[in-house]
Image 1 (cartoon, rainbow, N blue to C red):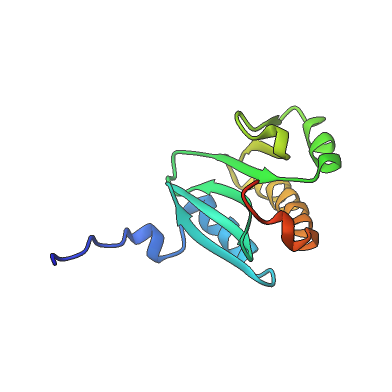
Image 2: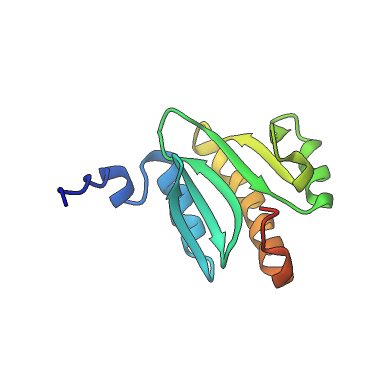
Amino acid sequence: MGKGRKTRRALERGGTGLAQRINEAVAAWPNVRITPMFGRWGYFVGDTLFACFPVRVKEHDLWVRLTADDQKRALVDARVRPHRRFSRKGWIELDVEGPEDLGRAVRWLQRAYNAATRRPPDETGADR
């Protein structure tokens, strides 16, 4: 077998820029696993994916999975939009372009985390 591909420095450090700050905040929550997947940081509680944020510094769209009530509440904000493909499953998108957006992003991430930890085990399957 040949030599494996090197891990990108951004992945080794846990992200750069805003992604690193989000990763540091979310990593402090109990039972959270953060893993790179398809160019995004995936935020999991057990097997349940509750959010994604781009690895690349140039991209800013945070995807968050909320309960139906929280999704309705989030969509009242003009800066939040339904996810382009998974809005029926509670996903929203919001842009995190600077430090001023971090507080709002972490609040929605906290709601998504809370919903994921309350979700019964039989709901953690293929509907992610």
